[in-house]
Length: 160
Image 1: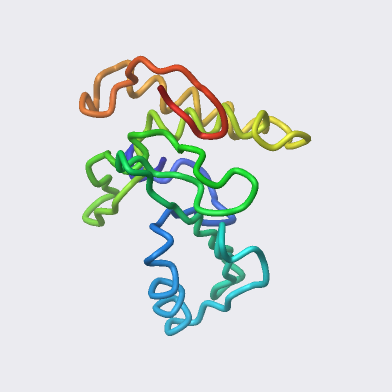
Image 2 (image 1 turned 180 degrees about the vertical axis):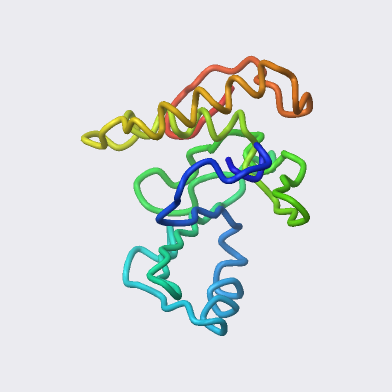
């Protein structure tokens, strides 16, 4: 979100990434080389790491269906689609640092749907604030290639 908006919006306790499941081992090895420690968990779905200064990093893994859409790679929702435009946004930027980002429209969908996909997960005030900020920026047209398009939510991370 911050790289899309071009500024740090609040203190963060963690960093969330998405990557293809085929790239996960290479990325974890590179992070380990700079001081991150892999934590136990379901490595077929997500890699969790703890870094310097107790910075948590979560890397959600992505499979891919025959249409090229990102999917959940394993577990009970294996094959379920994430938003089709998840990885389609141009890089974001804070100052001189550019970074690949999750499309802002997909960020909104994920933040809106997480309490539905994960029953018992509360809808957090910071998520509501993030949704409002992303939506406002998209509506202002500050990043036209990422504007919300039509879509129908069909299930965990699925866009029609």
